[in-house]
Figure 1 (spheres, rainbow, N blue to C red):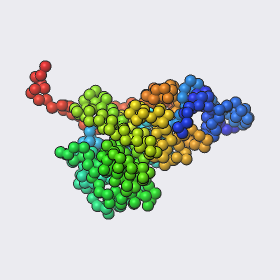
Figure 2 (figure 1 turned 135 degrees about the vertical axis):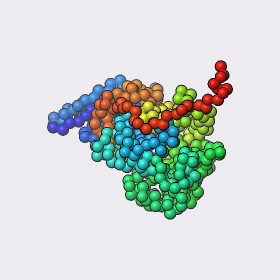
Figure 3 (figure 1 turned 90 degrees about the vertical axis):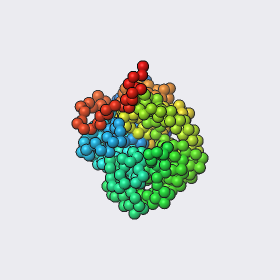
Figure 4 (figure 1 turned 180 degrees about the horizontal axis):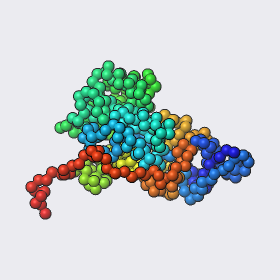
Length: 445
């Protein structure tokens, strides 16, 4: 006798962008959705050789598992670049990352994309999940980010050549070709370019790749059927990356009309990843973040959101990404906040916002025919939410609102998905102080 799980009684948000539908029945056999029915009684009674295991979702919302299209599973809530690059043993990085995957499941994340990983562990972690060695969401991943010697967001901590942490430095077109091919050989699902970077003494991020270098990277990856994403904080980088074939633009900060036109013409997608900026802008003072950054990041969101909305209206695929892995975006806490920002700052409806983390995310997972929506023959990655996210989108950012997680057809025990651990020796870098103790500060009232 075969066993079929029936999720019944709830309101279905299927992830396609359609309106919610009450009292739908979702039938799951193995890891696959075999039927979505308005009335369940006929199918229940039609086959005496079927045992129906019913999961009652009455009064709740049934929807696809969340797909986070931009996070860093190997960073472990890092507090500084120094900590990330120089204090992380590669074996422990992999072990800790495997544990943190369970926190993501508890928050309703059943799939994610990781652009770059410390010590290049991403493909191995993905394969371990696929083989059942560790428990976690589905993963699509890069190996390490490709940076020029100018660097990325870590300034002079990035060496002039070689590899450190999540960064692989490339200094010529020949090296770009070499490392793109190597990363693909070692299992990269995506190639990531760090197109902009910070230079001490210069404001903002600068374009640190030239047009020809970006073209070479894209051509090499595409010849091997692997897509390319790029970190772009600045409109020049958005425009050139899109024109030269980058498939996914991360951030798209300060994009202007020329940049948007390039994105539209190339068919690029955008993952704005506002969550890190918004958390610092709204809560930075609570974690003693760098003074003055709140207003800077708030302004970046306001300016960029207008153009992201314009991109959305012009048919650009928008994805949801939390950039979890930093101290401001710890795993399991903020995977749904991007949807709240999309509703508040882009004026998307809750259903439109949810689609960025379901159907659209399946594109980033390169599994559009298998994931992202609750439809017949799709894989059974499903969450049940106690409340109605169309009435209050913030419930998707509260793990306590998620009462069931079904991953690959299996109902998970949520009580086992939030592991405790003691501090690891040498893992975190202690600060003598978070501010400079001047005489004036010491003796001011």
